[in-house]
Image (cartoon, rainbow, N blue to C red; front, side, top):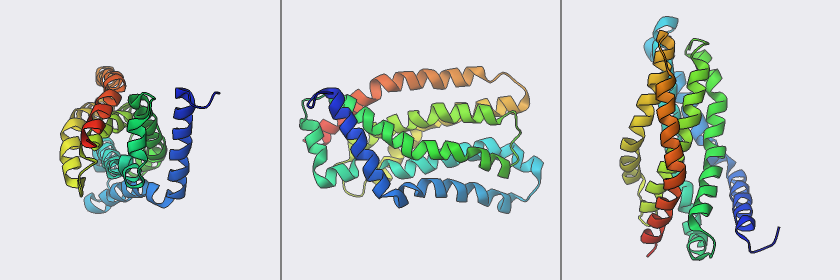
Length: 227
């Protein structure tokens, strides 16, 4: 692969972000621990009755995973801004949207993928019916990259502000409510024995749209924030 090409730049960026995440693996584990702690508290608050926990299991896990991912969004561009590499990305001759898509991919792989991997354990803790677990995993596999893409746009808008955590939360939360409604709705429909394909198809359609538009919007927002 020739140095200086767009593909070489993307691979170098992916390698750099993975190395930085590994060096800060303690911080990377915070969302995972947050989700586990939140879900673990519900049996203590509601009691150990399996029927009660099973009714709220899918929604509880879905909310815990999305909130855990929200904790890590602020760091998506923050370290790059502090060390000056974010300006280098903006000034790079390579497509900024493609570079941002690479950073979003690293964020999803290092944050959402471990959360999805631990979902079967959380489902056992809340007595989620076995037939609902595949639907929950599918819904999370569609909703979590959607959150990463939407979050990238919102982070790009607020990256130049100090203490922007609250503003970022206010921007992201209304945008992910539809994903939460359709994802949890698909799980509830599966648990009740109804058709659950339509909500998953809606999530897939929004994800396909976000894959195209979110990196472009984040690139434009980043240029505005740094000017």
